Image 1: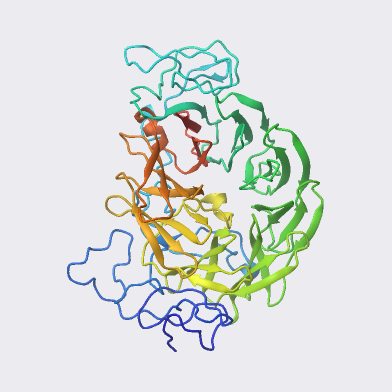
Image 2: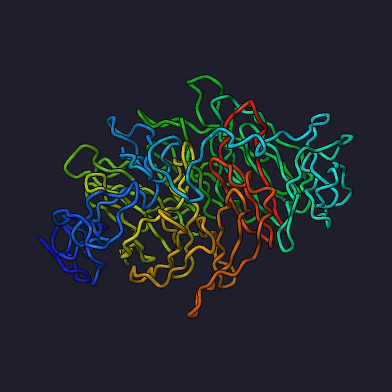
Length: 595
């Protein structure tokens, strides 16, 4: 059965990929309830080499592209989105939801360091060990205090660390003390603002990472309020004044390592941190603690109960929708009132052996379930839930073979899915009522960063992608030279515009502010990163530089294995999301840049 694009699908799998149109292209869900659905995937035509004069595919690309490459059914490496990682066992021993066993194509996002391929994408994995001694040289620690540099930027003067007395950014342009505000100070071997050129930003403050085990540790989350920058790392939750880096409240030490956190805060700046029940191999990620980001005050604390057989809390997925905290296990979820910690309801097995195990929060609460494992009716389902009651508002079924992997946005809903057998990916947008709206019709290899380790457990665990209004912004994979950001219509899946990175390094979207896309340009080894704005309307989409980071910090900025980034109140924040545990050097945990 073949069907041309923009025609209603014929009989077949409900809400799932169909056989592709003759024009080729890549696979995606179809919705028989909606007319004019954006084309369905088909069996690709016989492979052949690229046409004469066409550029050869880069490393990590399919060696035999389809005859007429296009977005539908294009056998692509999973480069186009998040990569697969093993996860919790699913029902009947099947792989748990969200982590289908996926081949690690060379160069695919998340390919482990040292593996094949690679990318200039700033969010790709980098070697876990320090790149160079200068990049991670230990700051002088006096009485447990980390001091940063004061003084001017002249190379012939030795930087001297000293305590600052106010919470304002240092007008000298030198880093501010990121420690605890005590100690006698002393000489600092690093001056991250050394050689700073006119117009470059300043490192306002920086923080070193706590000691971590040799096997490494997670450092999930980074939350920025109007006053405080908060960061989790291993067993600690620390807060710093956004202007000078002084601690705003005493660091919270958890008894065991942090294993999950809500990606966003509540409307009154509270987050939920999950930590392990113990240090043994049998320990569970089941201890929840509410924390106020502005004060460090602890709220309620609860223990998440185990589910039924195979339904484990070895790892959790946390999301917030209004006052509802949803806690996802491997095969079920439990909702709590975030203000009190009281249990609201459970989401358990339903229908044709459907096990809900992935949730996305924000303006809406989205649930994904894996159904009919191992049977003829095996498929994934996406549902919207009433966050207060758990009642299902609508259900959308994907066809067998398609795994829902990530939610790029919940309002509007944008879902990324993969098909291992077809080696294809799909990005689809949905209406508020849960009907398929459009599928991305751009023949590109996209490269957002979608986490690793515990971070890949999250349905919303992607950065380097932005959705605002009716437009999706995705970075392309850089194969040779600079990459591009592509703006895609969520109404029809077509490309609106694209903009090349202003530097040789990759550029990734962060957010849309006042009608402008804020993007981050990765640093090189001889230049700091950039923050740029790109007008989202009009005929010109040329990037305007908002911030050029100093070269003195470029090696550190470029050396994070994985990172979280944010732009708030004209300050740029960058932090690691994974500690290497390397005892030979002191890792940086977080840096703040300003003008």
